[in-house]
Image 1 (cartoon, helix red, strand yellow):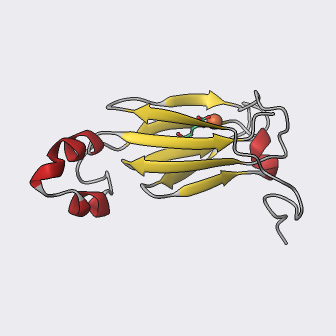
Image 2 (cartoon, helix red, strand yellow; image 1 turned 120 degrees about the horizontal axis):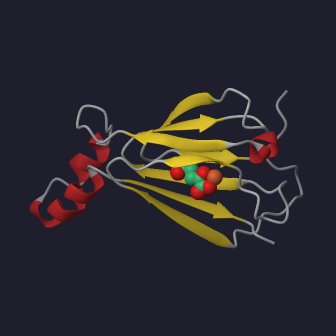
Length: 133
Ligand SMILES: O=C(O)CCC(=O)C(=O)O
Ligand SMILES: [Fe+2]
């Protein structure tokens, strides 16, 4: 059975949130999140806007990563061993056939929200919440 993301009785103190903005052609290279003191604490990662490819590799850059889609509304937990793994976002989808933001488009289709819609149709926003200390 898979281990829980955080053992029972452990506390998580969400102390910081990083907001990443991805526009046309933007990507995030492979990296490790290693600035936090305690790597047993998860990172909670929320995706909004255009669909993206997320690559999750291993503990060294040599390991072949697995690829997954992150869509608007997805919440991903980077926890356990994944916390020690290289990862990155090599591409976001800004072409209308592949953005997969229909729920946002229908929610914000009225005239009051045209600038928000223009913005989000070619954008991805990732908010990741961390315990730093
Ligand atoms: O944008 C994402 O989904 C990942 C962001 C990330 O890995 C980071 O900010 O460290
Ligand atoms: Fe990261």
